[in-house]
Length: 211
Image (cartoon, rainbow, N blue to C red; front, side, top):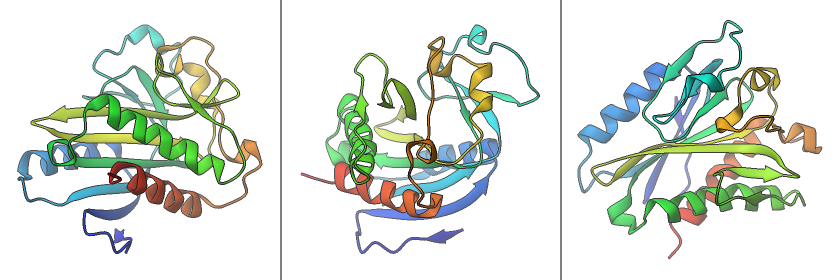
């Protein structure tokens, strides 16, 4: 693990590398349970080993067929999605009361961070009020989910960068049948996942901590 120096004292940014989902989920819960009103917010930047995660409202029928990849029922909102190497994940451990942010506003700012990142590459992206996430020409490029507990949030946003997209074909991504997925590599972006991840963190910081 290392930390990214940003000069911003409002949030501590940790780069965790390739990590197991269950262990990271537990670490987020522990951090949230132990934090206080003076605890600094944290962004965790990471990738996960291959895993499907199913949200609190997730329906098992959205896993269309088994392919040997495990499924974890987690405590975020939303349906089923896939995480794997080559996907940039930013977990946001925030004090929403201190930020004076509601859930809908936070989701909008997270989506706007990805839209702004893609705009840096002259790619037009959009969010959808009925289906949270970010889309490019009707294909989903970023998924998000949050858990709110005692005014604190955890989980976050996953941006597809340069990964094997095949596992998405075994699910209804985020509960939508025949939803296409894409990634930055397929859009002609050649920057590394490290570069794109740093840009993602910069845009998230700008969006969430703006007045």
